[in-house]
Image 1 (cartoon, rainbow, N blue to C red):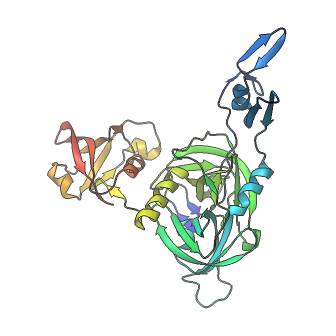
Image 2 (cartoon, one colour):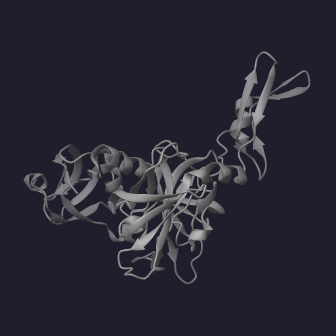
Image 3 (tube, rainbow, N blue to C red):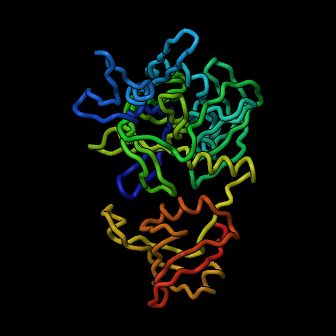
Length: 371
């Protein structure tokens, strides 16, 4: 499945299961392969705090007072993470709306089991035009799927199947705690539906990316191919950190895939289950980024107003050409930053904005409208 893109040619919308590796959270790195940890020397013996050991090396540990022993469990390796996560990854296949009567004109993607009673999370672009949806679980069972909720803005959707006691994927806490350079694993259904639960590895290449997207994305160099769309992104603890959605495809460009982070997943699915759709809020004004922001230069430039749509914005005297500098006390220089901040608000609520209006820098309360 492909989507055109202004900044870098065509994008193939894909997905998969990404697994991010353990991060060295404690201790001080001195040289490659070396880590300084808090230690004490007693009677010629060096004692390292157990908490420092697990923070530096990853894994977990537990002290047994009855036996006076410490049981250390090393961090999971790639095969064990794949084995843990794969049962929660499904293949999704069906006929595209424009497929006609041709028997072998099919489209497929990947999904992740979100709830044990048959709720499957995937990409909106995978299922929005799909008919006769079939979901195949990792154990080879087939289910008829029903498209339940679709949000094209975030590229997330839910499919419902009639099943119980399904193996549910574990989602990381929001806001996401991850580090660039962590090992990642992509699990999905690349190219052919017969290649379900294919695993590839890479690293988390970047965070907070804005690539012709409404919200921020994660970047990875794990191999992601057409058909992987909608799979989960998981760390080495086996927690989903995102849902893969697209990749750059162009001559001279390699290994640039993008994933929807768990923060957005939590926001969108929370609205799905509560409201049935995403109650997305808007400032009620059209905005344009500065030249520096558009080309990716560091900038403190605000956003220029290009249109005034809501009554609330009109009552504040906002006009085309005015400049927006902060939203809810946060300085902003990109439209994606505004969209991220508005996740915490619903239409009808008020939000504080700082703007240059008619030549004066002012802070006002603006009533949010429906996006």
